[in-house]
Image (cartoon, rainbow, N blue to C red; front, side):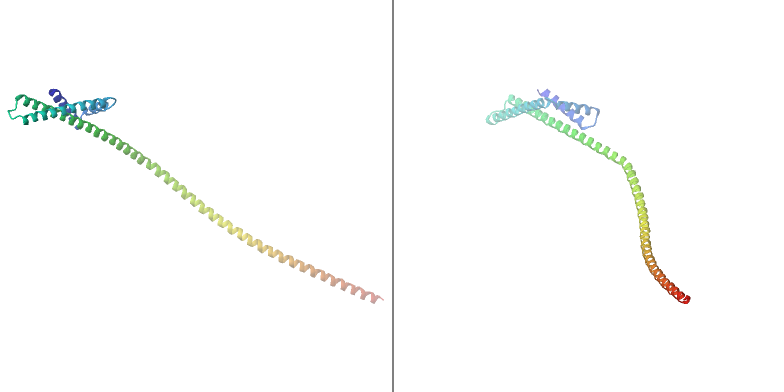
Length: 222
């Protein structure tokens, strides 16, 4: 079992070294750990870790029992107890190191995955930023063309306002002329009526003069 634990520890140390440095094997190890954490992999790993932890606790308990016998016995310590003590100590140490290195591998794998996800997110954000920067000139040209159209429309509006003002002045002048012509026509009508009355009065006077003249001529003839 001790040889197996040494092999596991050296394997875990090799995995930690591969994960710590960027090498071609790093991607393969990460892919293997990703597959190991899928499906029933986590259950198997937890079961193995729990078994190793129980065996380690058993070794520690055996060490405590041997130490109690050493304290209780006044005689010399037997060589068998010494060998068992050393064996249990070595096994507990190796199993504790195995569990600790397994936790280190799990944390390294987790941090590497988080770093890869954040790098992908940063790359996506940078690409979006570059795309928006590439689109800025088109938007600037559109804004510039719209501003030119607005300026053209404003000039046309000013011209229309000046035309409307000129037409309004002409209409006002025409209305003033119409009012003056109307007053002039009314004055002419009044003058015409006055002339008609004078004409009638003159006719009446002429008729009376004609009568008087005809009467005087008739008297001379008699």
